[in-house]
Length: 344
Image (cartoon, rainbow, N blue to C red):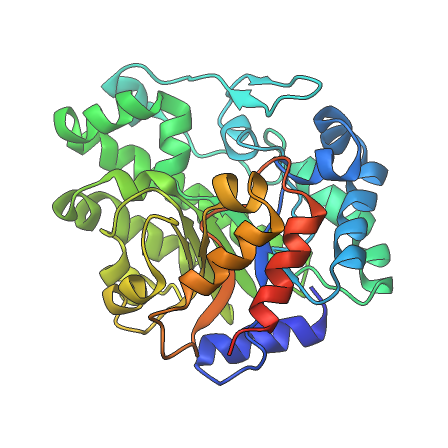
């Protein structure tokens, strides 16, 4: 992200009028390798190819803000690997982490990893350190500390179904485990900012929070998300949860979130109302069925429909309802940006 894009992002979050309406997308390993013409394995294993793919994106779409920008990641394996999960990588499939927790006793016995040494974390940071001179030479900067959220990590370590059941059957052990995971997350976010001092944003991804009811969200999600977002002082606190559901929206401002990427199943005006118009929204064209699988005409039509009943567009960044899907073509991204620029 360059300084112009960062300053524009901050203005939108503060509620300033920005014209034309900004366009931004979350991009990472599901989309970038295939679009850049390399395998997923090469994207993860080669710093050179990872950097080239990200540079190609910002050069191809200079007027689009990509979030978090030069995301150093290993798919869903980054944080679970630090807890000792076995990570499985294939040539052209997204990696996954095996479960390591099966009993309440194991939940309670979970130990906080050392973020300096454990799992894939050192490789995430070293990749950024190696690439940083080239990134800054391009006029861009690493602006976000990034992590999966506490419930998301818990679901990787246990399995989603098993974790959801445990919230009801073993609530005490769940709190112990979530507290350990959150302590780890705070350490991890602090280390990223300490290592890369240009960081002035936190980006947390936690779809599991969207699967909860109101009571469970307040008990098991909100306090741990709030601690994580406030681990470091930053200008931008960005939350991704594209699970269907509106349970988290009214709580986001109190948690500390000021930028929210949500499900395409919910309209922009609906989400503005649910958040009390206190949180900037990033969304919400369907990422797979329209942006990836549709035609440029479908994309343009979708943009028009997105904003039909949204009179106040101050706290909005046009995007899709989730991250950029695999196989999203260049022509559709270009059509998206043009349609947003052409909005009345």
